[in-house]
Every structure is written in C-alpha cells, then in structure tokens.
Image: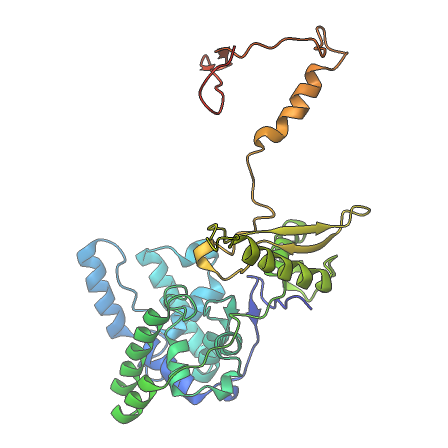
Length: 365
C-alpha cells in the first residue's frame, strides 16, 4: 500500500471515543482552547464580550473568543467560504449553532467531535492521526509533554509543526503547559518536568510511499470523481511498481552523490534530481521520483520536478527546421538554402515587434 487517505481533505483520519484519548491531551486541549468548556452553554459570554469590545474598537473582527463548541459548529456546519468570514454576522450564527449543539450533545461528545475533526498539520486530521504522525503511537499513550505539543497545533498547524519549526513548536508547548498549570490541571513541578522532557518524534512525518506519485494520483481523482465518491471507501490500484520505485530513489541519491564530487574533490552544487520510468508499450508509470527528499525544504522537495513545466529551448529547433524543409510548403528549404544571421524584426499581432538575438548577442552574417 502506497498511502491510506481517510478524509476528503486528503489526509489521515481515524475516529476515537474520548475514552481512547490521553487524559493529558483532553486537559491540554481544554486549557488551551476553552478553559470554561464544562461550565458554559456552548458560548462563553465573557469571552464574547471581551472579543466584541476589541472588535468594536478595531472596526472588524480582530479577536475570536470562539469556544470549542463554536469551533465544532463552524467546521461541521459552515461551508469552507463561511468558515473564513471575519464578520460579526458569522460569529452570531456560530454562537446560536453552538448553543443548539450543547442542548443536543453532551460535553464529552462535543469534545470528542473537536478532537476527531481538528487539523494538526502533516496531513493529519484528528488526534489519533496526529499522535501516529508525530510520535508513532496511539493517542491513548501520549504523555503530558507530547499532549501539550499536540494541543498547541490546531491554532497554526504549519507554524507550530515540530518537523518544520522545532523551536517554535517547543515555545508553543511551553505556553500550553503554562495554561494547564493556570487552569489547575497540573502542578508547577509537573510543568517543569514536561518542559525538560526530550521529545522523540516519529522517523517520518507521515507514512507515504512515493509521495510525489501518490499526490499526483490524488489530483487525478479530484478531477475524475465527485465529492461524494471521494468521501466513500475506495481502493485505487495504480501502475507504480514499488521495486522500481525503490530502485529509482536509490539511483537518484547515488547519482547526486557521485556528481557532487569530481576527481579534485570539488562540489558541483547539484542537490536536486527527478526521474520518471514509463512502460513504453502501455504508457504506464512504473516509478516517479519528483525529488530526492519530499520533505526537504531547502530544495523545495515537495515540488514534483517530473511534472514541472520547462522551457523547451533548443529542443524545438529540429521541429521548426523540419517544417521549413516540408516539400508541401510554397517555398521549401533545401540543403543549399542559405540563411543570413543578421538582425531581424518580426511584427506581432498586437502591434509590437520581436527581435531575436543569438545567445552571445552577436550576429555572424
């Protein structure tokens, strides 16, 4: 299996009951997102009043004040466009829906909804997927330090992603631990111990074989299937051969290592490469390596260089010259045709002109 995608957004997603979530993570989430979660009726009136005053002074929505229940209502009941509207009307509708959710569901059910549908970065939706992505363990086994880090991610998943920004993620973790102490969930000693605990992250951000190929296939599915079909349980069988893929990945890295050094030991400053292996009889893609490392930001590794548009350059010249020799033309060229290498101007349809030049900016007669 190349990849398992269990959400319409294209990421991993596993639904858990609240009993299967670490108590530390539940407490960290409440302390961070909604300290009075178990006391208010879905809407924190003091929080809204504070946010309303800030927004009134600024003339726009500058502060949120959204409770966990409001965030659940926004994600589940609003369209994508509505979720990002910074209007008082949206906040009022969100508050009404949150109040209705509280009347229908228990607090634990609402908290479970939040934990299961929040985005934690790394293509991980829900705490179970996040726990597996970042720590390689179930959400039930997360300790205090790990829980504090995950609870801080939903506010800005990319900014606080520990794989991309480890120092920023650690600072956010400390903020969450401080909020937990302030809310009475942990003691000062527990906070200090958690802050000093070295975190051991999963070896890969998320399990995916041939990531460039997988995401290319996903893009094809988006254009071929309806949203309802994408949300259903489907198995996609591809033409990729994992043995070919692994050979291609090794070949790319070995080739880069070889050309990085010449006989004098000097580097060539070459860090990126791509490879696509295609069955010429069927056109099937057997291997696709878009870069040596999908997760390497310094080379924009997530960009699939096998699909990136390129300037054709001189590769077009044989085709153009072949057209000039076509005997069906009014005055076809022959081997004896002389071509002058002199400055020329060609009129374009928009009234402008095009004056081609040689690579060395010289003309040779």
